[in-house]
Image (tube, rainbow, N blue to C red; front, top):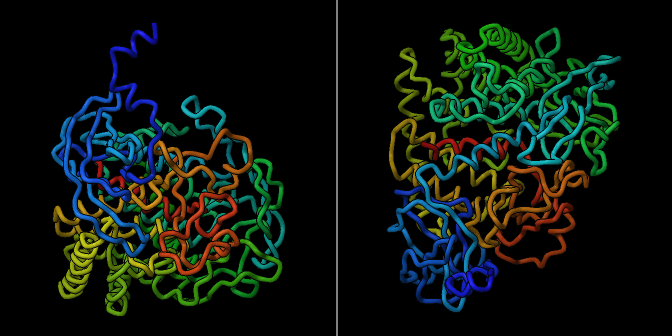
Amino acid sequence: MRLTWLAFCPALLLYGAESPTAAIKVDQVGYLTGAVKIAFVTSPAKTFEIRRSSDGRLALRGLLGPAATDPLSGDTVETADFSRLRRAGSYYIQIPGVGKSWTFSVDRNVFERAYYLVMRSFYGQRCGTAVDLGPEFPGYSHAACHIHGEFDPSSGKSGPRDNIGGWHDAGDYGRYMVNSGVATGTLLWAWEIYGPRLNPIQLRIPETGNGTPDILNEVRWNLRWMLKMQDTDGGAWHKQTSTHFPDFIAPDKDTLPSEVIGTGSAPYKSTCATADLAAVAAIAARVYRPYDPHFAALALEAARRSWQWTEKYPNVTFRNPPGISTGEYGDSNCADERLWAAAELWRTTGESAFHRFFLNHYAAYLSGLDSPPAENWSTLGPMALGTYVLSQRKDADAKARAAIRSRMLKAARAIVKSTAANPYHVSLKPTDFVWGSNGIAAQYGMDLMIANAIAPDPDFVNTAREDLHYLLGRNTFSLSWVTGIGEHSVLHPHHRPSGSGQQPGPWPGLMSGGPNAARQDPVLAAMPPGQPPERYYADQQASFASNEIAINWQANLVFLLAGQLH
């Protein structure tokens, strides 16, 4: 019966059994119906065909564009432009003599599923509770983890301190205030700008259906932990981790004590952590007011107390105290964190003291708008400037607003120009291939979408989507850098739950850090020197410098995806 059926489907005999080739690079999620649709080819050819994945039938045929050499990867790239394809469906590209691509979709809201998985990944990172992704991902679960904690001597206190909650920060089980700060702030900004698009999307988390939008339900889980990290004097401890990293075991199997870690000397809390808390708590005070006014009030009070602490201690920095080897997230200058805190507190309260502080200091950070920082958790000037312009408060200083707006739009237009000139249509520069380069690619897209929120321009939105295409498979490796998204995606992230052996594959929706030309781990260091920067990547658990995940990169990707929803 099966042979008879195949006899009437010659297209399936020709195309169905063929394995996809990495020589054809597509966004493995897909393309918006009315948008530009481009794939790239790195094997010489002249024509391409778009075929339906259901039956292999021809949907469109075209000529490949002229070849160009990409300095970031070393690839010689030809362009397949199939923007004329506007019928919704599932497709692949077929190129005579080259092969077929991974499948992709065309749809008016093609990125909604990706948004759901990427945002839901924060639920999978929850600490202090049992997690279960449910029947959609059977076996992806663990019992409650890290439910007992204590003060490390570096905190200035002793005894138990069960700060249960928050998100595991990255591939380890630590929780870090400064990275939580930028990640949480980014997600709350996504809600403020794109709330109407995000409100209907349910994440299938325990709080779903409680009257609060699910993105805010998930963010509140981390916010509550951040609030617990505040001491009675208003300062916030820097992190809560074990003294060293555990093995690659499931979260609930990690029995190392979860310790609140401070600076090791009075006042024991750090200014950067405290200012980050002030900023995100101030955002929370305005965002949660319609849904949870009690929580909003608590957040605002915490923000005020944090700010007062930073006025007393304007630059208490953090370095790992003796005996602590978990992530440091050290920063020698907390002035930009304080600027962000002042901007968010002013935006929420309108109080003149916060406004004066911002106006007295903002100009020093204008140049930081010109390019995304390599470590956005330590460079918060752009967040401060961005919230000032986005606020639309009538009491904003016209000169300051105009200066920030002009610099942001100029930077966005420069990104549009440089991205269009890149053979792979990605905004990354050679110097961007550092630890977390994929987070930088998402940050470029986020910056463009913020610029669009200030001064709508289709070029900003379309260029941001180019960076999203890069992250979802349109790159030299033909690899979706997000686990579980696309037919050819990351399989071995540096992520302890994924590497514990408790699940059949990596936890879904997690973005790998991406190529790192600094070669900061043994896997990358063993690669030949002198290669193009994008080549320094390995889908190996041991490559922590190129294949770890982190909540700040995740948050950038959530924002970028949210901006492409309808």
